[in-house]
Length: 405
Image (tube, rainbow, N blue to C red; front, top):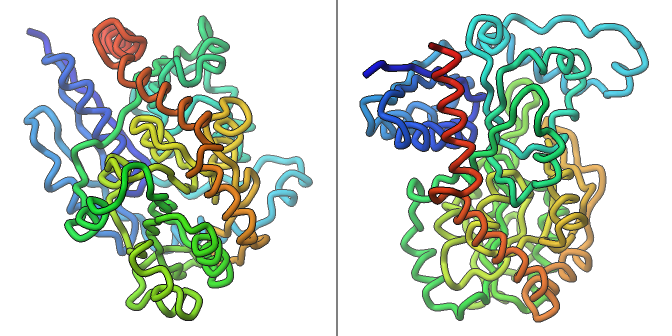
């Protein structure tokens, strides 16, 4: 039996790597002829990637190859570039100077041109100015594998049918087994009524200023809803890049007396496994930044979302869910936090957040909940034999093997 090897190159960062590994598992389970090598890139001072890959090589056909860490000077240059106002680049109307020759740029020119998108099909990539030049090369690609499914983004997928590059919507691809619930959080959830808890979680890099944290706390207290809040501490590291850490004492960030007044009604925790929480019967609502993985998890578990986008393509995801599909409540569609050391452009008031939570967790939100639950059922069906994502996966494998052969 002839063998074929694929090379996957995820963007730096653990969440990108996890999504990529889940995609490799989907392909390896589907065809014994395939083997996959994942090239991992580790940011300075990041040990999570090595720890994850050490526990993810269950299949002999899946291997990891670690590339050297980027020099700090390159990372600092990248950070400074992000602080330049976009309008300056647009006004000059001339080609941007080339970036330092990092590994991703070199790999683009020497490796096969099948690409996998972690986010949805829509226009999230257009947030990056350099795509004004790169878009002319998109038709040169053989295909794009996307973590979405036809029933969820039918208009976008249908609009690309019959064009280059070919689109393979093979999702939803989720890490459903990789994260367990923390015991104390699980015990607390076990004691709550079904669909009574609103879960607040804002992703790997999601954090807020002290003033915004207090507004969220006031909204939760006034809503009288049960809540589980994953609260992370913003810190800045070399180059001005915004990172997150854990609070040693949540009281330093929250309004005085908040923890005592909400005792028994809510829990404030640090990092928590999102999948484990969303899959619990007690969770009935999800206040989220709306990253693509979080969006798919919300749909998969039938837990409706209130959108609080922070950065990247999340504002577009929020608009799609709220305005086009009617599958989410709106806190904001256009809120944007600082990613590299600046303050938020504005503070979202407690009354806005409270209103969205109340709509999400009461009968007023039943229409949204029904749509999310129905889409979740469709998301499971597309992965079964004969489903749209199953067919796209088979077609992708056949096209790759035919092109290589």
